[in-house]
Image (tube, rainbow, N blue to C red):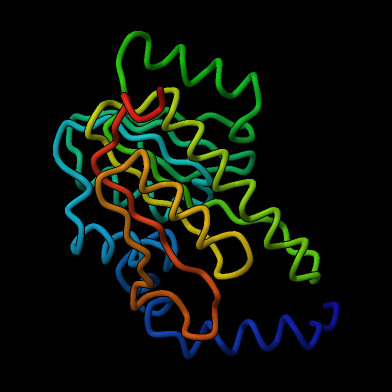
Length: 210
């Protein structure tokens, strides 16, 4: 058996000690990310029965599993280039958010309908260069926002993962021009040392887009 790297050993030790990782294993959840969305939903009331939801960055399926439990006979479109664990009624698109082919598949599934909620747990592949990684993170935030501009219904909502750093405060400020309420939050299930936060925007205004 090949010897594990020091970073792999650190990750394994952290997973064993992590309360939410252990809770996910014991509760049958796909991943600890389940609890991040659960806590956000409990605070903001994002998910309701019958909703149409677009989930970006869905792999491995932690959020997908939670969404399925909340929306009943609603519609989930889960997008990720990696495999997603999902129920048979979930529409899984294996592709990158924002790509023309992926967008065409989303549009085809929606037909003339609009979304009630856009969720994104997308994160960049980290280079280790903070400025580069932050820029990539903001690009992913823009990708999620473009999905809202294209498919989100009036008064719809968005919740996305972002990272504290250059550009985020200005981006959130601009978001308030097109949503009635915008909040940055860090659920308890996020690791304390992580720079990740979640931007929750509610009350989408189509008119504000011009």
